[in-house]
Image 1 (spheres, rainbow, N blue to C red):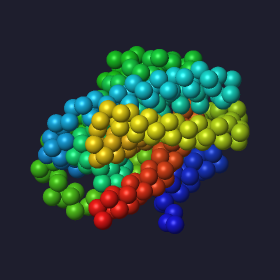
Image 2: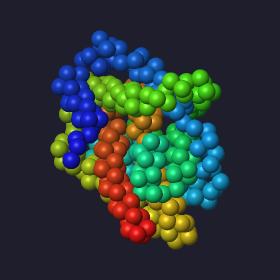
Image 3: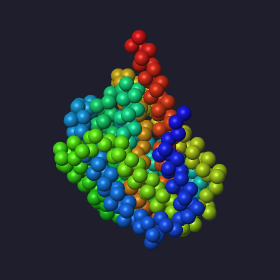
Image 4: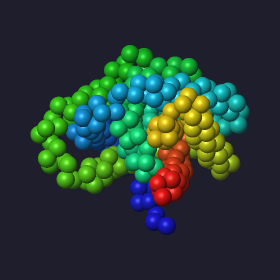
Length: 323
């Protein structure tokens, strides 16, 4: 089995931040606050440049499917997160409780949702539309949903400031990428792997900076291996619940097999690419930022493994049906 280099790099970044946080902490020699700020803008500019408006339009017609997926992402998931937030009181740190709710409030992924849907022979145009629109909705919906629990006693920026900050950091570069797409696509279209590496590199930098901040502030002294296991188990349970809910509800609503596959993969996934910069904006200055991001980090890795297995199973089932 091939080892995921991105996972190894992220693990190395976390371990480095725990062992030697000074370079990446505020005021450190790497000046990661500025680097990540402009790097995030570059990532979303590249995403905007790579996303095809034609692909979006071709999948836009199935509004019932899109409404279902977005309801799962921004209504059902946060409700489950709210229940988990209450139940976890006293079991894990406040930062981890907050992190679980933040995970549930996040938008869906784009790249992996579409890739898994394609592998499983689902409705790819609808997956492209759903995953893309989810990211745009999340720029406003996520801060609003987070009002339910606040910031665990830490002062959050005003809602309007948070939304404007997210729009300025994520939406404007994305829109500029779309505008510049006719000019940039001939160059970027042949360098998809390089674009993907830039995307992943910036995520790793944000994770590293966040964990450096938390380590330097001493937050991890309140963390234990037992809590890590609780986080991993709960993240796995959340994924299982959402995969089951999206699949069963989509079937009950009469969606086709291809649409059910799209609903399952788009409605159960959460975006680390959007989540990392969003957390950095929403919890700016929070000493426990690394711990807040931990549930999303673990969920991201678990969903990739589990959904890859599921997509392969769906693909084999589709092949068997065709024979």
